[in-house]
Every structure is written in C-alpha cells, then in structure tokens.
Length: 275
Length: 285
Image 1 (cartoon, rainbow over the protein chains, first blue to last red):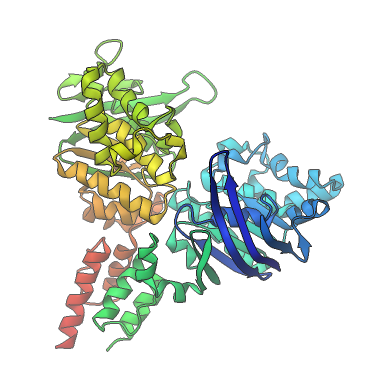
Image 2: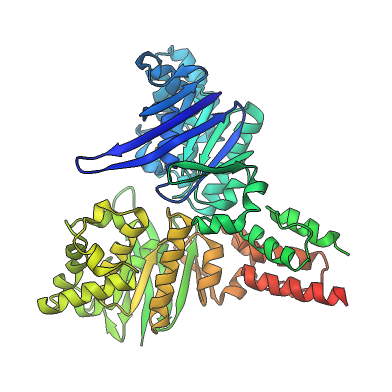
C-alpha cells in the first residue's frame, strides 16, 4: 500500500511560493487502478512525484509499503517498487537498442547478468515487444516507445506503475496499445496503476478516480460515480466522455433510465432494452 | 483564391540509408473558406504536408501555388506570399523565447518588416484574439504562464503576421479540457472572419465538430478527401489504416446495424442525440 497523509508541498522561487499540494490524504492499495484527473496546475503531477520520492513532503508523510520517502536510505528501494513513465517517449529512452534500454534499470540495481537477461525478456514479453528487442528505439512508433518505457519499468519488478500523461503525445492506435498493455498488466500480473490523464475516455478503465483541484482532492469515486457529476466536472474545467455526455442528454428526456453510461456497448444495451 | 498543391513529393534525407519518401505525388486544392481536418496515423505525412504550405520545406518534386503564385519559382519563396499562411507547430510553446509576451508576439511582424509604429497595435490585436488582455500580459515573461496560456501566446505570434490561412499541427495536444476548449473557441472565431483553417488532429470527436472537409492521409498519399459525414461513413476503411470514427458515429451506426430505425449518419453527439430522439419519439406514439 502507498499511504499519503496530510501531504503539503510548495514550489518556491526567489520571489514567490506556490502551494501545489494542500493537505492531501490518499491510500492506494496493491492491485488497484487509480486514475487522477484535474485541470492543469491542480497538483496531479506533483502528487505523483511524491509517490517515488522524486519530490519530498514539505509537511505530512508518504509511505510505500511502510517505507517513509523522507528517509534517504529507503529511496532506492522505494524507486524500485514505484516506477514511472513520463509524457514524452523521446525523453526517456536512452540506449541504442530496445533490449539495452530495458536492461538499464536492472543493471543499475546490480542484478547478475543472467537475472538481467531474464528480467528483460520477461518485461518485453509482458508488453508484447519481444520481437523488437534488437530494434533502435528511435525507429519505433510512439505507442511502441511507451511500451518499451513500461518494459523498462517492469524490468525492475515494481509493484506500482505511475503513468504521468503517458499517452498524451500518442495517436489513437498508440493510446489503445498502451491501454491494452496496462489492462493486461493490471488484471493478470496484479500491477498497481496510478494513471494521470486529461483524456476522460481513458479514465473509464480505472477502479477509482481521484479528482484534484487547486492542490486538494476534490472528490473520489468509481468512474461511474464521478462522471454522474458531469456538470461539476465541467465547472472545474474538466469534461465527461462523449458517450456519457450523450447519455446525460437522453436521460434528461427520460429515454434512458440512467445517465451514468460509460461505454458504447453499455449505451447500445440500455437503448435496446427500452420498449 | 486558393492554395494548390501539384504533384508534390518529398524525400527526407535523400541519398542516405535513412532516405524516406514522406509524400508521394500529392494533388490538392485548399479553397479559402475551408475548415479542413487533416487526419492520419503517425508518420502518414500530415506534418510534412503542412510544412510545405508556407514554404518551410522545399518540394523534392512538384509545386505549391498560393493565389496563383508558385512559391518555389525563385530560389527562395517570397515572404509576402508565405506570410499569408500561418503555421502553428506541435507544442508551439516550446518555441517561445523572448523576455516578454510583447517581444515574443512582435517577433514575426518585425521580421516581415512591418512598420515599427504599427507593431503595438498588431500585438494588442493578436493577444485579444487569443483571449489574453494586452495590458495585463504584455510585460510578463511567457515562461511564467500556464501551459494553455503559453500556447495561446505562441498562436498570437502567428496571428500577428496577419495570415489568411492558419495551419495548426495538433493544437490541442497535451492541454486539459478547459485549455482545449479555449483553443477551439479562438480558432472558430478566426474562421468566422472568413479565413481558412487546416487543423491536424488525432481527436476524431473534435474534428467531427469543427471541420467541413476531411483529408485522410496514409503512407504519404491522400487516402480520402470529402465532407466529414462521407469520410466517417467508411468505418472499415479507416480502421484498416489505424484510424477510428467519432464515438457518436460508432453508436448510431451500431444501432442501425442492429435494425433500429435511424439514419446512422450522425458524427457528433448533438446529431446522434437528434437521431435517437426521433427514434424514441416515434416509438412513444
């Protein structure tokens, strides 16, 4: 479990101080898929960066499996447990082949060559990129690059994976590839996923959605609960998925029993049930 | 008045092992008043085509003709012609460089030798167009603004050159929903003044609401060119080349396939609502 307690954090410059997180409390259980949404500047990334000690609390605490991120001797253990994939695929691949790139993490952790090979093979297989192990990363598509970045994280055998807007630079196919990969990792390997995004359609996959505003957790719930408060989300500068938007309009007219529909298939089903 | 693209081919890094034909014999006319959605898989040639429209890239073969004038007749394209086509790159805020918002927006028109006494008005007008108050923002550092504001300053820098055509390469990528809406609003305003827009996007829902013409690219060629309703009716063809259709279009098509009595032509949530409403009203009688 990751436990965030009374966490506050400010960015400081010579002139000003901006409060990025304001008394945040959150628990993330193993095996969960938690989506974090919120307008730009609401503190999503700052919160994420606290989960593996890239940022340290100003006040309050963050613990990963009981390890306090403020203790320097815990940092490397924590970073092995909580892996990160960032927005721009081109900024995080460093080696000349896919295999070497994925090996970077386990090499740094001091694994034996045999174990490194095993980890690399396992990780590439888990994201469906084993065929590309000798390819040059820069020749891959955006979706493939992000899958390699995920493999690089998996090779360290983490329990938690933080995706910080990791699909925002991909085309629809690339996004789908990444989402399918994550779904598989979450369902079949029990990997915990913390997923930051601006795409409301991607939130639908999560078990739980955390909505942030001005450094605070504004509300939390299942995607259905969150998107049924569509008007509040729009007021905050967020949105609801297109299908949910349509369902809301139809429900107002009484043509749908409930407006909290998230996917196309659900919508077809509910419309066809009506007599 | 128009932009004509004739037999355009472009090869990246010719004569090297990385040689790649990014555009293959493209023929296309962009008419003034078009709001074109340019879509296609990553690597299909959208951005390469866009960068030809204002002379940033020189065709390997073929020509670009703006209002009857061939851009590459001489060694360098004429500034007066290129100015007519404003190009907003992907993540344009990465190109902000000046110390103040004013200096950044003024850079383009100064470079085009607009008279200095006209610059303040131009900057003020451009910032107003993107919804930023001139007096509030002109002296601020562009780097201290939010992501959405930075992007609007970058777009203002292009608008300050007073283009007739605006080409935008994924202008809403990476913004939050509110930021996206702001950009869409300002581009709509630009279009409503009788100008032309070419909008590159991966977001089909967004494109369906905005464009009155869709150009679909695939491996350096034009795969489809037509009104959005027509293009999005070819779901199978689009899926084959890695594209999708808007969620609303998928829904009404699926209902129609199941034998429900609706036209199945909607591509936006608003139109899907109308189709379903008609069906429900008939059922109610």
